[in-house]
Image (cartoon, rainbow, N blue to C red; front, top):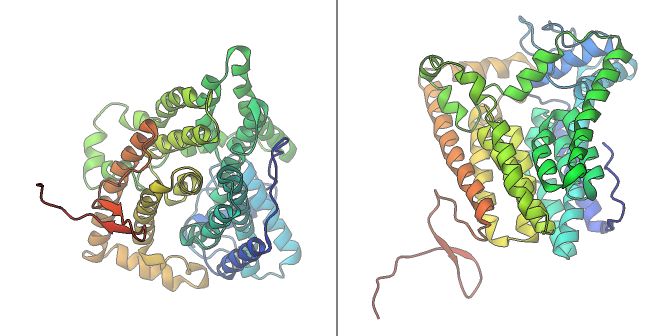
Length: 457
């Protein structure tokens, strides 16, 4: 994905050590690319690619396995990728290229389908260097950001092992911090909406931060994905049947995940809450008023503020979205991780503990939800999927897994609420609510647990 123009913004040369780190991070990701994948999500990528490569509208039906490349859920149909046409078109193009040059080897196809998220991860690391180098004023801080993301296990799992493409959206998100003015920002927002909706959450911020007629610039961000979608459907000869259902599915969310939605999807809760009229319609779109209110609040910071205020605004709106979305899947956490990393290395080093704490919670959820990653070698054979299904359906291990996920999701919900408060109050050194107090030792500056001292002279 090309990075939007940043006219007037200096680009810093990447030192030789930085290029070596990027290459090392790329090689690590490529080593997992061709033999791993989530049996549900990545199988959907395979089927969507096959359908689009043969000129069929992917939105009109559920799709059967594709011989000889399907590897999971071989006895049932699956939906296509429920996004605007960017991702289905890219999958279709890669599948078509595989048919021409892949030699019929399904592992070559898996390798090709992993390249967009892997490239997105590498570009993310590079952009983190650019942003942190620019805002911190030091090469060392920029290289720290680049190295962190290049070797960040969570990002490696999501992009090169799981096969999710959210790293491309992180590239778009970071590009918002590099461009200048409402025209460029809304061009980037429009591209982001076309890729995966996410930057739509920043449109209220764009509206409230401007004055007068300049507020209309946010319409450009809506026109870009609308125009590209219509153009794609006409060029491919597809009817518009099915796209509305796909768009509704993605914007509404599917419940579960690591926020409050998990508890309302747990046990007998669905039967209880379903008795409330329009409950699922309302909670599915709680993120809309949340980002509108967040955009209105954050607009007051960015008008007189500089880079720190810009970052603070994006972090507030992003965290409000993560808290209120009906279902917070693991890949969505990449957005706040990247922003918090910039904040810690550029403006608030005391927030490092909070960054590590929220990463730890998300990592715990990812590992438990995916049964310690045993899902991911599923492309090698059906044994992995069968083994995990046995664990998940076990009356003992399955129950422990579900209750553990419930506990983590409740902890993450409270943590996201605290994080919103941190950004709202602009607290420089917050302590995660579930960790004991810490202080820096005067000698070595290391984090050590605070000990209670009796009062007195």
